[in-house]
Image (cartoon, rainbow over all chains, first blue to last red; front, side, top):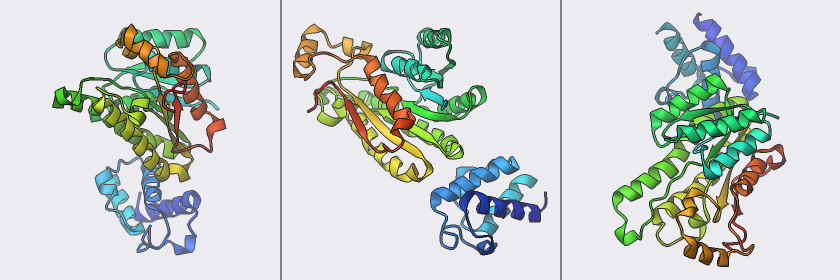
Length: 81
Length: 244
């Protein structure tokens, strides 16, 4: 799976699961500050990523994620590991 | 609506009654136990004989890895836990002056650390289910105090503060977190009291008798039900009017 596909899937999850406006989602967008996703929402998003991509994201690594781009990086890294 | 329930310390006493009650309400039940496999199997057999679904799972719920493994097994065999009942608990009673650090640590580990570990593990699945009921057993001891039970009372009072905090954290996800605080209930734990102490206790109870495990299970069953959907962060005292 390439980066574009991961981005597309993540965007769908943000729109469908968390009700974020599609236009607001950019690589630099910060979950909590820009997208108004609370810290529990970020946890839920990462769990949804685990389910959708079949990867395991340890809590320590999950805590480092603040932007959409970082989430994509992490999933890409896990898929290629 | 039927869910998967986990009852820690579900092989005897109040835990057993809760496991039976939740199974009777149509939930499939994971009966956790630490040492008494025979008793846990007995609970599973009784549930199965009545047409319900249950499995027995050995795990020390104060142990991080054992809890993780237990949740993995439950998910595999029954599905995601929607109802968690933190019931496992022990006593190591002594006057504080004589209470050594081991008696303190053992009680805090089993009664409180287990609540932290199991609640955390269960939350992941509940967030995915977008539904959850977390019910932890406290005690009147943790509300009114009891001589000889500084360790036990501390662990049981802590569960109330823990539950209120978690209720605030995950309320927006349709997960409720509540506490049931039993008074003196007829179990192995209170049988150690002896007749004289039991008589003194009963004199303090407005209803004039000890409680039955089924009466605690009924409160847990209610909090786990759809009828209790708007109740969270609460402590339901079921003590026959002891701590008034």
